[in-house]
Image 1 (cartoon, rainbow, N blue to C red):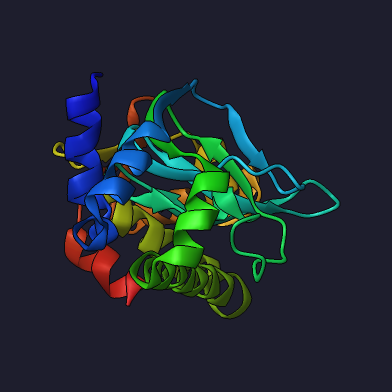
Image 2: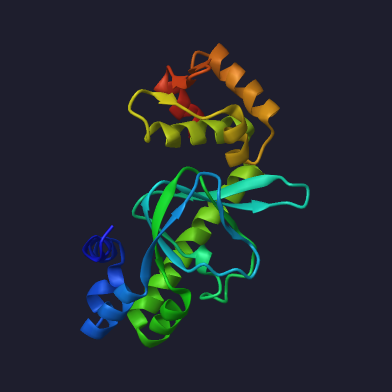
Length: 225
């Protein structure tokens, strides 16, 4: 990817760009680089590591928290065009909880150098507002994930997950294993398998080796509400 392509992605997905001076724009581009992650790679492990701001070009990232017993709870997922701010937690000192970020598949992203971005945020009110807006949006995602874990029954949580995944496929089939879904929901594989069996008995889905095919969208939506 050449510099012009990187510039196009930055201008499209970084709203404060229009409020930067010509010098700030030039410095921003010089502090950007294209970075790649293999599927399953850990980008951020919840320690003092500070990768920097990421703008997803292709692929998907997953942010999650990890219990002492090794249980994962997915907080949110990022798609192409999204910006990852928690990978730059050293920039936003207000972020004090440990978040892990992993690549769900082979992923490319534009990395904005953390030290440069921190200086730019301090000097440009529009960049500062954008950074805190992103952090607020992600915090809302975190609260929604925790609300599901704490207050919703498993059938509703699974229905919400399948409904969200349905928007990403064109053949009505969700190509995820029971283990993967359990990881996203912060549950056990056996629980997910048992619930999918129940969904199949109710005529909502068909479960095969190829994936989970949605048969009755109306029933699935009713469960998700």
